Image (cartoon, rainbow, N blue to C red; front, side, top):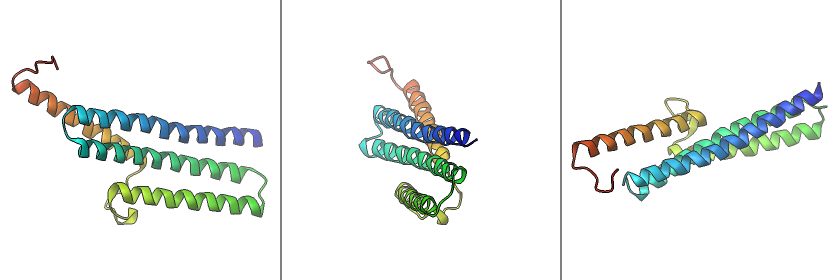
Length: 148
């Protein structure tokens, strides 16, 4: 049974790492699309930073879950509990720091609770809306000589 839980924990770790990797790719794409729409470097950087931060938050949340599963299902010792506590503390401080950097406010002062996945979804939705607005603006003006 312990082997099953170890495999589940490894699966969670893989999902956490994948969330960060995929989030990085999504952040790059959204930042590049922002630049392509001529929204300016500052807007593109903000999109990139916000989306990447959200992906890291999501990955950290999943990695904490993996650590909890691994520790709870193993033969507990005082040393394992202390190590888990330290890892969770470090990841929690990182998460709070990233969230403050992204949102500019303390997490517990936000009106709505937002997870890393919800923040990535918001960034994708904003990108889609901006792309539709840019397409509509191009359609109502003279055609782009580049064929776009």
